[in-house]
Image (cartoon, rainbow, N blue to C red):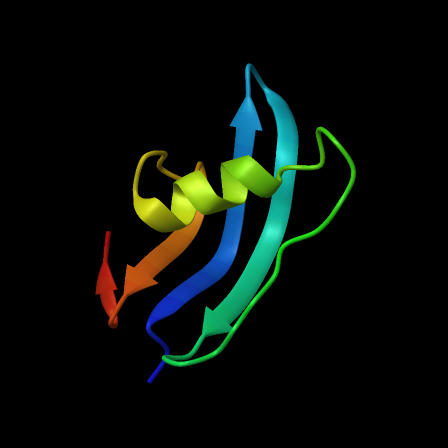
Length: 67
């Protein structure tokens, strides 16, 4: 089972989508890097995984339980 899962996550700031249809699973012990240009949604993705932001649609799961 994945420690953190995102299923079809969408997120928009003021109606402008910055993340669309993101699906990923992070397993315990994995080392994962998030790279991309400025403004590409890296910090937003981490904030969604940490529960600081809620997705507009889709699900974020921690240990199989919704955040």
